[in-house]
Length: 168
Image 1 (cartoon, rainbow, N blue to C red):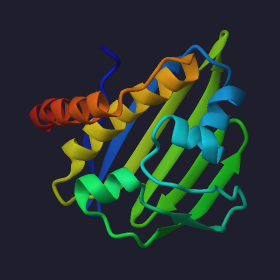
Image 2 (image 1 turned 60 degrees about the vertical axis):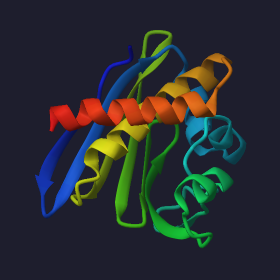
Image 3 (image 1 turned 90 degrees about the horizontal axis):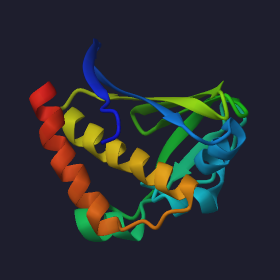
Image 4 (image 1 turned 30 degrees about the vertical axis):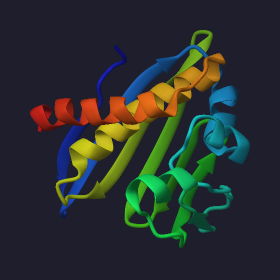
């Protein structure tokens, strides 16, 4: 089992969901998986987005067909803003009211990924943590060239949500 993340209240009505993983891939390869639209789709990033790395750039997160079908998500995009991009080390942006921060540090022949998602504290922390945990598993599978079963990933996210609820 991959390392669990943590869910904690950080004040101001916000929750921080944090993951730290060691990946057996160079930071440049992981960076591409986090920023290239085709690679984002390859690991089922939960939106269709082209990331403009210019600080202050406006970003548009379009829901995927799967999100619209499974969850009834409206077809309109959610906007965000690029906060920081320092390839292949740091990527931070907002997505609606959320903040996503990806840090990559070289570690031997791979890298250490620290991912932090800060969200409004509306009780969704465990569900979001379960979703990102399963999503990071998909990222690792895509980086390794392994096949991805989306239905299994959705079930895994639901199972993990229960574990994160127990942690809270």
